[in-house]
Picture 1 (cartoon, helix red, strand yellow):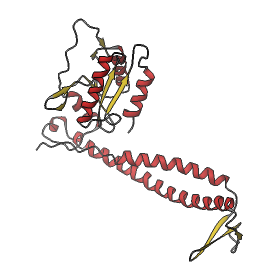
Picture 2 (spheres, rainbow, N blue to C red):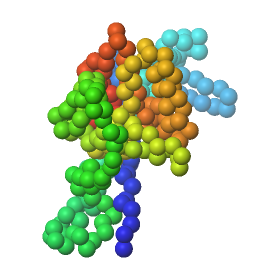
Picture 3 (cartoon, helix red, strand yellow):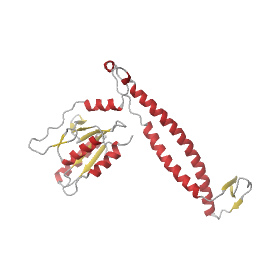
Picture 4 (cartoon, rainbow, N blue to C red):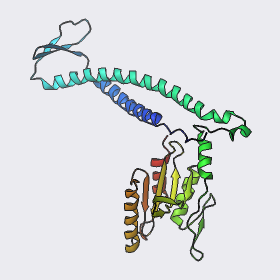
Length: 275
């Protein structure tokens, strides 16, 4: 029985983002508490009335009364109290996330590797629900396609991956993707609807999330007709539900403002190096 592969989970990605944010706040709170003055605020609440007392030691059961007019002292010690409680909660959540990530990563990898645990000759009889990243990438790259014909009389550049591209900037993009082991297809046809077929410069697979991106490089933005056509292309993408900054990437240049390798690397870092 043939079926689609299991969708790639974003649980780990979300948990890692949460973990990173909490670690940043944990450090900030620790630094703030180290600088905070000695003492702990005690709040007495009765109906609508709230009173504050500063206790300098655990043995101090009554504390020094803080007037409501002393807003500076109230701010300092109430913030300290809040930071202490928040830090404790963050530490507990970090511990939970650490355990979850360690266990979930292992289980996710185990599920992916079940298919490969069978002998190679047996795999052709099996329809897996998930694949290792390497198998998934190979399957994606092995899907045949027919790109746009290259001009016979125009300049053609050959990338390190053996692809023939149309410009030096496209060559730099292709080489940067190949260097970073980011799978891509050059000018692979994309059907926007039954009447519109386009050829994105690069169709790129994030090897970690398995999300597909379309990278268009607009190399002659100082040409009015070229720029007009480029704007139309973006609108075509958007009508098909492909939006700039989500799964659509645009880089641009003019005759006097070329596309730099630093910019290419920043795009790759932002869209394809995250796990």
